[in-house]
Image (tube, rainbow, N blue to C red):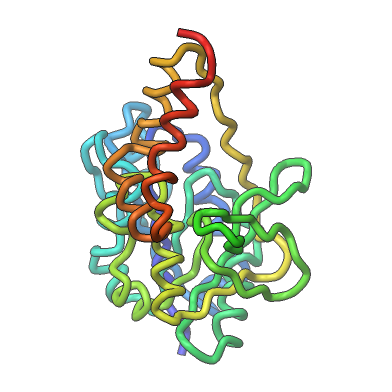
Amino acid sequence: MTPTVAVLITSYNRRVKTLDCLRSIVQQAGLGTSFALKVVLVDASSPDGTATEVRRLHPSAVVLTVPSTCYWGAGMRTATMSPEASAADYIMWLNDDVVLDVDAVQRLLDVSVAQGEPGIVIGQLRGSLGEPTYGGMLRGRRPLDFRRVGILPTVTTVDTFNGNVVLIPVEVGQRLGGPDVHFPHAMGDIDFGLRARRAGILMQQAPGSLGLCELNQPVTQHGRTARLRAVTSVKALPPRAWSVFCLRHAGPAAPAYFVKPYLVALGGGGK
């Protein structure tokens, strides 16, 4: 039986990248013969007309428009609860700044079938120079020490992952409930992976790299107030979400982990 994959994407105000991502989806080798795809795009009221263009160029995609205050975590939860996701065999998390290789979905499915049990498959991505960017992670000796495994030639078991390209059997997604409500944007993917590991769910990174995605480059802020505002923003370490993450995954060291980034921001020099 041909499996159906619900591709879940959130977008905000980067129409060209979103359309490039969608183009790479519809060009997948095996689409319509080896598997079926259904795109569910949650757009946060993009002022650049992303939703309108997606509806025009990809009429089969489901486009859900939400308020501009809806970030990645809430958007992915909205997509996960859609009828299209519930009816699929797999859900696939996909960032809208990813351009997939033409065989990416088939390679993810091949690893999933070889697992022999409902497990998560992560796609490793590369930058324009071929360097590894986002993918699976291993946990170090310290509780919140995570290292990306990079581009490897074989299937690799990991401890957690970046959520840029991730294939999840629908029963696993329903069991874990999608990105946790405590994480509006950052940390929701890593938390999901750590919860999956705790639940005994197999997580493996597919061999090689599956597409292009540049690393997000941090913006240097000058002055204590600006640095503190940046580190506590919804896209970084907002205190409520960061406290939940530390309490959940850092054990007795949670208080020290919680205060460290804010102390660094305050002590980094300047006024």
